[in-house]
Length: 286
Length: 278
Image 1 (cartoon, helix red, strand yellow):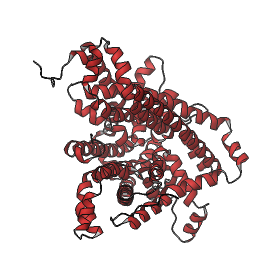
Image 2 (cartoon, rainbow over the protein chains, first blue to last red):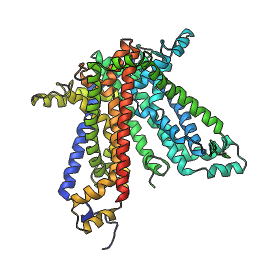
Image 3 (tube, rainbow over the protein chains, first blue to last red):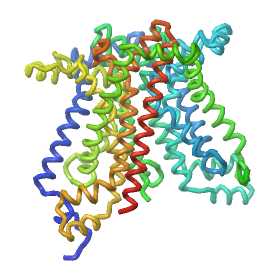
């Protein structure tokens, strides 16, 4: 009778009619706001049959867009992972002044519009800037070329890995690393055999979110890419170009590929949260 | 200088990690933002004011901030209810629904944009219904609002959810035992505990909506003075090779965003203080 873990406690919950109303309301609103657009993507992609959709994926424009998106992610994601690990190491393993300022600076990209991010890169490395004109003169254009797209993708995903690692590494402290050093391990050995195993799931979680955003980034890339067909049009940019040309099936097919990527990301993210909840910042409970 | 800049730590790698972190941060974030400020003010303050102070720019900035505020308010209210339902109630497919809340984070904005447009355009599934009722959604401010609600949907739920999970049921029971109605308990006991996290989510949702581009431009119709958002105006200025004008609008957006975040932070500090006095 006195089992306090009983889930139903009339004194501390809402009336049944209210619970049912709220649940129905929430499901209905999510259905309209989230599920309807998701279903629309696949519905519009398959409107003329699977064959027609697959044919649009095989055309050279889609192929080069897919290749470019993979290429951009292959540069942007590892670079941001290196940054995230080194920033988290710096912030959690040492005491120094200005740490709060450093964390705030790392977070800046979250509060900057992607379009403004792209604009910043155009102003820094565009043909009219001194750095940009030097780079163009030496045959290494950044803006309207792949390096600019990589930089734009890196800007918008900059804090992802660091944000995920810092809370986890604060929690784990420095004792394990200090013990390993006392036992004579080198710095790199400590990192690879002590630190990395402790943060690997958090790192993977951050990399997963970073990758999804980098592959799907539109605003920042739209500003720097110049939208040159076959050269600087990533998948999201190609979706826009096809859509504006009324090539609806082709646009939605490419969009469906990106939506599948999003669904896989969500599934892996949920799996990580479920399996390694205690080793992730997002799900960690004190 | 009473305190040394950095305490000695036995852990190696200070130089390497500081080198990578600071050089990448400078190159990727600080230098580009500095370039924005330099370019925006390169022709002096009067030129900056002249670039921002046009009816079209004001209309775009006002539209972006006004609709973002409405979208963030909707997301604040709905997000708290959604978090409550997901944590406290048990119903079929709850876990699927919980995972799906993050969809707007994972789905590329251009994909969301064309999907919402296909849905709400006059020949789309929802647009048709609206049309029958004599109502137009896509290519009006309502369409912009729906896109902004979509992109900001997960923030409040994700910040509030962990707080609800940690509320001790005993607090609510104590309140009920002392004769409070459920509504009174929710308002005076539960809400003050959720408010700081809800405000954080509200701020994040607002910041995201103000800067949003991809999901909005397809559904907005982009009519100057009516449905043209500020980020689009930056893109248009760049296409006209007006870098200084684009930079000026970019700076105006940054200043307004940081100003709003500052106000929300202050509100948060106040609500935390009120909590600690209870």
